[in-house]
Image (tube, rainbow, N blue to C red):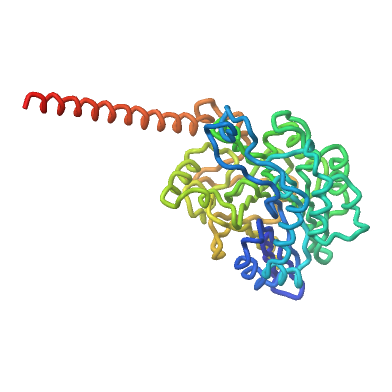
Length: 436
């Protein structure tokens, strides 16, 4: 029996089949949703940024309302009204492709910052209770659902027959999150207590922990101050607490799926648990980093990804780009072969034609205590993913920043030199004209 689990789509080849999907901005994705509908999904998961419920103000470096740079005096994003949020959810829900999917598939999901209501927002956001109600209405959550009574949208679900069970744990990384630079809490006390009960409860063959932000990778440690990305790595005490809870639960078969960053990659951490932990990041169907800039400059994004130091990324043989990231629209996929001995998983990121752009094969026995394996690196040796990004040598950690500033400095000096030559040649021409 062979099953394909994707958190855009996940399907089986027998009577029991599941297909997990996560999409962003369905009001823009009718064609993509129609494509996924053909996979005959039974389950559909939203991973966050399901709508963009905040309003992005114009890019302004100068003037009264500056929205960019350390000198900005106005926020780049402002919350939308309740009426506007409701309107955007209605637009998403009435999408023809999504409507067809809802007829066939059960829909569950969590949120990230933009459908929470404000870019990078946490527990301080004043409209979170209102937006929680709107999101649960969008998901057709029952009126008596515990999610309507609790603070936050976290939840768990169990799918599949005994012996082939998959538990899906949806985390809420917004409602209780402290400020980004506080190293405080992400989940809050009540959600931590709940998560401990979920992980230490009845066993399942596979447990997928869904986090709207990356768990293992901490790209901000090697890209700041050029730019920052949200992740558990920016809350090191909270991430360490998560690793310790997973380890103490003695639960087998755990891995993460995440989004948010507008590119796809696979990360692995070998020293936080009794076995390796994987984080398969796929982001997103409509929002991708290479779509944010003109196509002729996409090579700069790929060059930056290649130059950015990383200690957790998995380099698979199917990587389409040298960096093993993918900045075009993409979706994530987990294929599980229950008939194989041992059970095998193929995890990865795919382009919108369904072709792998980065992937890895995992034996289910490797996601069990004492089964941590070392992956073969490109040079034929072995690589273990234990060094955190913040522990890299200073010159390595800040390589991208140094090269970026060096590149801008060279361009600036070249521009000054060209201007100097132009002025000098103009002066020479003027003198020659006077002499003539």
